[in-house]
Image (cartoon, rainbow, N blue to C red; front, side, top):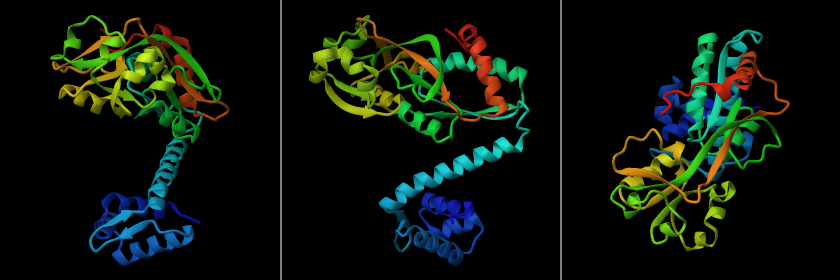
Length: 300
């Protein structure tokens, strides 16, 4: 049976790419570390590393195991943190997953007020797109997630938030598109377009209609930050929600909304039938009672 320490050994070696460096970090002799890795491979019945003279790299099986091992360690640490505190006390860590959206500004306002009332509660924020948020929710690695609709909510309890996220594109200030008040679907023909891999799910491609097939989809992205750098370099236009770039103070790019207007709502979700700590339950009760009226943090 795999032990926690063996998983930690494996992840350290995978991260360092070198058994000698990993053994120094783990304060373990190199032969002992090598034996532990060989025993792990024997137990799994597969090779996890390609061993070179100075470096080791993960095999395909090793890449898959790396993901699973990290999830196991994350869940173990989350569980340990929960039980370090009195399960009935309002203390501990609440894990929240979200994409880049304006909704986080309103949630931040609620977190601020909640923290004043319950100073022993801390937060762990995880940023990614909805697919990864749902995956971590389903595995118990997150307590709460924020999703952009439309989204399958059948497995979750949820609070639909009143704020709307406005869709559009960020474009270089030097582009003719920057001179427009808004962008129509036709306006983006002839430009290199950066788009989220989830745009079809969110209805963006449907908004474009027949024009979507005429777009030059140059890059697909997960989160907007790196795509915004490409826009900054003048490579094209990135389709996104306004809240994902509202904090950027970059004079070289500008957000332009779509016309006709296209908006989406956000939902705060948590897994049905999943036991939660007192801190999580108290926070959810607080959100239900106050989020719609909560002051947004740094609102414009």
